[in-house]
Length: 78
Image (cartoon, helix red, strand yellow):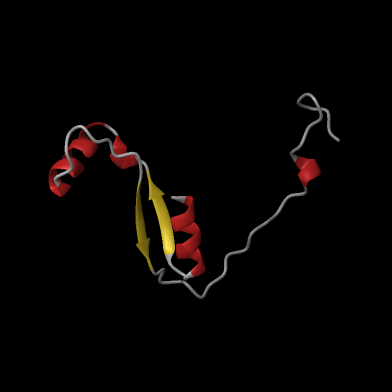
């Protein structure tokens, strides 16, 4: 799944992992729609597509590692 995500990203394709299809009645409905045998389990699924705002870049704020790392116990900053 990670390799597919990385390849899609390199091609400019949006990739979204969906795990909600693997639970309860939703899984049963998906299995019946796609003729998936009952003995198989849906672990993950994904959706692919080109984003409408593919040219827009989002701002990613990076924190310094020291802001969220602790030494041997929580609260003891490096």
